[in-house]
Length: 193
Image (cartoon, one colour):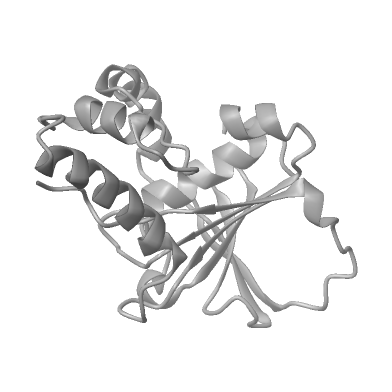
């Protein structure tokens, strides 16, 4: 997010798109973090949208596949040996591609472990997580969830208290300009050699 905000400081909305892999993306820990991301980055809107599981390969898979293919070509030509995430990152970063690759060192993740564990302690699971395809962060620990992005039935859920309410959504009259919206696509396909 720091790189994105540096290049586009006027971003007001961030929309993530990924497949529905429950082990990586579709679970309460990610949803809770999404609510804190919205607050920490002072975003007007922060959403996570899930593609239906096992429904075609898309741009998300293409980005990851492109980077993996470029690295694999370097390995096959014996120009590099990939033995861990850091060497994969260095090879991917040097590859001729317009895709920006970011490496987050294990130490950075571990340095925030206590913050995350405290944040997640006692959090409830979102009911119907498997059938949910649209999540919008509202405030810390609170999201709006819908089965599909264009559904009008919305559930407001607090990860500490449970379901706040269910309501029917009306049309959003506030259209945002496209230059202030960022779209992030994530792939759950792990890299393996």
